[in-house]
Length: 259
Image (cartoon, rainbow, N blue to C red):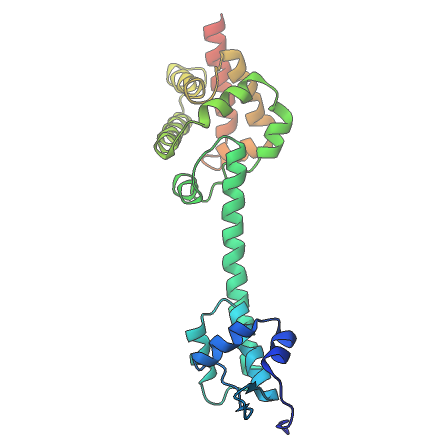
């Protein structure tokens, strides 16, 4: 390819073409990143077409998130053609987009959690909840129960919880579900004393951490555990048949207290 060596751009020309400021071009010159091919007798910078192409590469790598020192090192490599730079820039952009997508998902998760009254930093949410999204159904919950007393009370309480509170609450919930799964595994009847004790712990856990939970309220929750596939999956993923077992244990326990 024949290189145009006759076209000359002033600082103003190149700044206007590229969208960078004259000060930026002066800085690139001072650090040796983009040194103009020539100067006028009066000392004014003149850039060639090759200089303009080099500026294009610099700006492309800047858009990929690289620092000036990294860009200078890349441009000093021998044997890199235009296709090589384009391939590397695509790889860099793909990597940057993937990292930004992850960051965006983390921030959205934290924002949605805030709407649910979970006032934790993104890092704390990841530490406490792991891969579980605590606000996965935030919009649905708000639409269905946002005006109810239990929802408002739960939001009021959880808004004051810190990381240690959430960690302790989740540990208690896991222990209760673990006990219910153990009851099922051992063959303990859902209307027996052991299952009833676990069902009562389940109710008191909600009552303590979220909102006043009567036995009638707990029964309504138990109905959702078997009616909503998402709740059913939560329990059955732990042990097949656990959702129905928890439902039956809660009903039996409630009947014992109500009667």
